[in-house]
Length: 126
Image 1: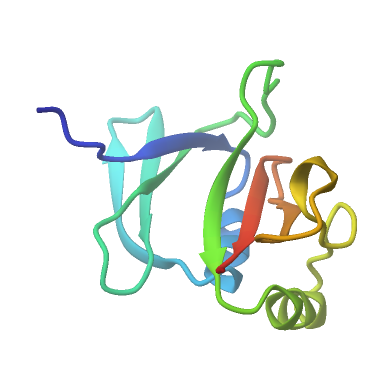
Image 2: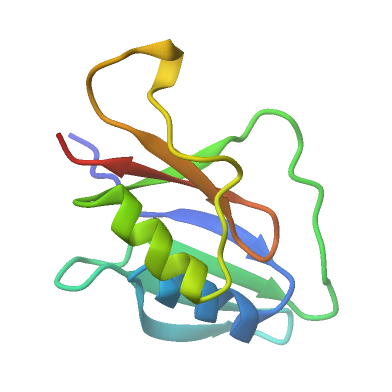
């Protein structure tokens, strides 16, 4: 049976991206040079294996995301509290928290964007 290992984003600035993901709770685990062409940075949530790989290709500062990819998702206990903490760190949601599909019950979500424009969904527990 296959095991999910990680997802990878191509980024334009290592320090800027690592700082963003650390604000979301990730920890940098390691950096791995790929010859003279790139550096991979592996990030994990505390106590977990690395699941996010950021690849910086030397000399490339931006990428076209295309139309097929959408987001990664993180579970949070308190969405309002998380968004308030992120706002203090300069990270604002795309729009206020909401329930998908106009539901009146169930979990609420909000999206933020990383420095390269990738979306991160925050899903409230419950």
